[in-house]
Image (tube, rainbow, N blue to C red; front, top):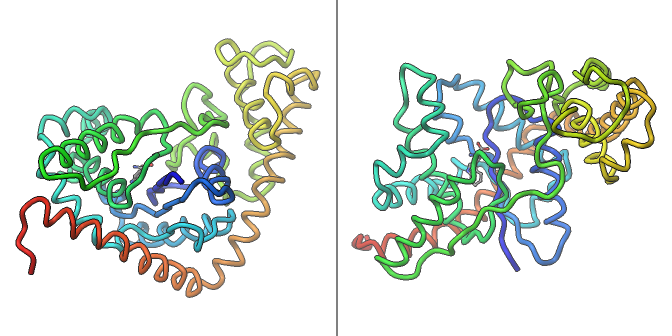
Length: 328
Ligand code: TRP
């Protein structure tokens, strides 16, 4: 049995790329006997950049509701909101004591994000250490992540090994894994960049909560290429290749096989629109039903946090004792 952990940071809008690349693989893991899952909404991570408190609160509930609407089983494995399990922040501090300042500063994502801002929050620097705490708290074996987060999982690995070496075997050493299918769904209007949760990419992102006609409109307007023949060539025809990847992700067929079925871009786009609407509209419908009873979702989250705390408390207790804190 191996354990996989996935976090969703409640900023921006969840989109088809998140569904195909992160949510659906969790559902598959939950259905299999050899993988145990830990899934959480990483609300603390949404505080590392300028944020609006009401917006973070609203998104946290929205993300949790969407995960349930997508079919996540809250009783298979763990499912909770990160801040409801204070052990994450407690372990974060202990792991800060094993992380070099320079080591944190070397994170590429920190360099990129901090370079774009005037006021950089300290939490943006230490955020990968919080991520390490998220991972190590639950004896995670595998962390499915995109390329942009790989370095953070490496840090978690390094910190786990260091802790175990200096203070005794305490943590499972995790590794990053890459989701097999459609790991990269690109933006429809600029296929050189990944589909993004941020508001500025609304035209190119297929959001899980978009109405069916909005999904269709965005797909029909997707950037293709100068030619007209449908071929799967991600380097020369990235827009068309992305549409084929999306269709493949929704239908289970292979993108290169799909290409042969279409004579022109219009026909391809209509097929993609149908497949995306078929995939997302049941999720949206279930979301609207669940969202009409937020107390139910919050009760699910409370129960999830309670179970997570039982496991997390045990681990933090061992870490505290190993690192030299006097028991109370
Ligand atoms: N940082 C991830 C993101 O922004 C979310 C996340 C938080 C995470 N903690 C994690 C992912 C731990 C994997 C493991 O998408």
